Image (cartoon, rainbow, N blue to C red):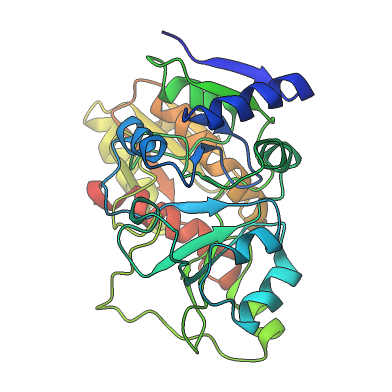
Length: 329
């Protein structure tokens, strides 16, 4: 068995839509990361997603729909706040958490009373949703906890022992997962940072967002402490500590891959290095998963990441990298 990567022609979109109707899973491009799509109303199809990913059954999925009108059919209550956000940011990298409609399957929500919904901005994703004429649940198209895929080739590598059909929409424009905003109660709050920032949301709504308490552990996609992780041991260190650490790693004979942006680092200490733009958070977001995957495939002993800046523009990057390095720290 081998995955099949198909270009986004009308006939291939029709093939993918037919596969969804048969209860199969499909690799689907979005503007954030590639998703592993299944009919959101088909319990057997959803079970295939969980099995393929090795995903815990209580970890909720995000429902992808073609427009806001379709999104409303998945909610028992559609608050004014949800409509304002949808008008401003859909199609786009924003997931809304709302009270679920009665027909929504527990497999989608992890048994919770809420459901996450979004309208993707990728033209091929929208074409597939319209051809399918329904909603799909689509977590990232990778084994659970691994680095999210941003190309069709990444998806094929993750599921190399399957006959998965993958629509090739090119490299994802954004490169990290959507912002998740909980609007299921009177005080909206961000449960996962993404391209749409908290201050963008606050400016639109004219209210301060509520914070997630440190003792809370909201069950949403990407909320586990360890997530988005390479299989190679991966550490994140502040700039000031890197040279000393790299000296020690070299002296210990370690094959080290480095992701950095500072020019003052001595990269002679490493086997392989990647330089990213430390002045451009959006470009960093776009590149980081692909570069992590590249180093993960390079037979290294260790990947070391220079910690990015910490202002609000970098919230999504820092969230993903803290989780990617959690189990190695």
